[in-house]
Image (cartoon, rainbow, N blue to C red):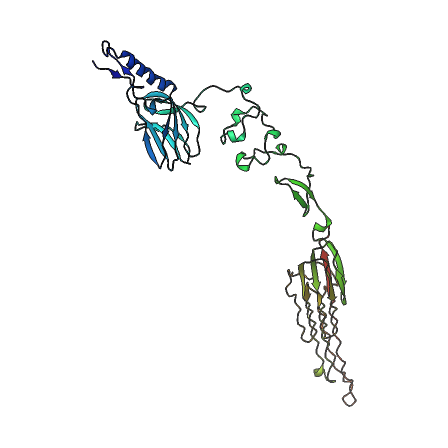
Length: 419
């Protein structure tokens, strides 16, 4: 009866009474095969593009790469590699990925369902693997049970670079185990925080006083924390009136040195009312006629950012006399409000390019009973003459009365220098 060979290591199994005189040689061959399986080291080049390299185990006495316990894969690879060992072999392997090139290496059996173990494109590590005859599985920290005691780990031996992303979960940390000194600056990003996980008691104080700041000067550090905040006069609101001038007047308006914006209310002078006409004769049919009223002036608000120093001429219009126009109100480089015309034309003024025109003339300042810039009233007509005796000389008719003057204009300036 002929010899047979073992399934895993292909050792020659001799039959009793066979191989007389050669048992010593065959036994030595078998021992060499066993030695290769227990302590053998071999290298296998898998250089080249994407391919499959089949490792086989020949019958004793032939030594084979796939029988070695340690196999180093070598060569420059230019594509993903597959290395196979025969199905049906139950064996332990230590495989070193000694290739050069950023491509994957998969170590598996020839079984159709085998997925084996794969080195990533940048993984050049050594792996301990075992075959159950159909599949290759790893024997490493991902598959081994048990724990590593704290005393067995040197201080600072485990660095951030040695931990996979999200490897340290909440369940693996003792309460209060992670302190401020163990967290590198700027390593905790928004994506790593659960919603509402950071409360006020988790934030380090920056010394900023809790308060309401009006257009504050704020300092922010490199981590986005507000480290100082304060309100100064130069950053206050539009609150402080600095001019109230009634026409007719003019001059120079110099803004406060801390102001960077003006709020200006302007009303021009109203037109004077037209005078009444005189009677033209003694007869009642020749009585005079009344004059027309003066035109109302324009008025509006101007919101003006300014650059320091700011010093500009201004003029405030007075009210017009009988039948004459009022005066315009203006500040150079801010705006001009036009006056009302006098009778008999009595045209109304306007406020070109005003930022706000509002329906109530006395919205900001009161002024006279009718308001600043209102047109004068019309003069009353002349009366007819009196007929005393048809045979005598009659009294002449009376002249008409003059119209009243228009109301003066006004200029009010506010500056953003409040505290």
